[in-house]
Image (tube, rainbow, N blue to C red; front, side, top):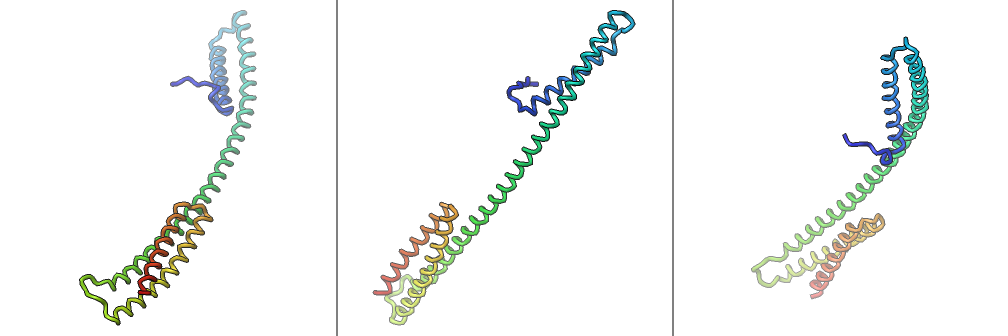
Length: 197
């Protein structure tokens, strides 16, 4: 068993070690007193000394128990205070995680909406087909205008998520929202260029 260095212990630990030592000494003294022959003069004198040492050690234990009890109460109060801090912090962590998850969900939904809008646009791109008829071109331009409106709405959503992420100091989500917003603005410019052709 490794040796105990008192300087490495808390006051609580030092008191516990001292009490343990005092209890062992009390036990040793009682064993000596029990085995001592008090029928002789020297035995009687030695017994009186042992009783005095026993009484002193018992007094030390009584005082040590009171001090230990006070230290135990302080340790309990510190433990309760630490537990309260942890509970409050855990609640705050949970709230932050929920906020982060909600913003991430909004971004995920936004990305899905953008993909769906792109898929609608892709329906007009028929590979291997020649030039569009006037009717197809007109339908295509109408779809592009609807997409422009959808993308403008998506940009507002991305901006709202970016602002909220910035306010809540979620830097990664703020960057993701900014990236989506930039991509959407670029797509709108391309659509507007295609519509004016």
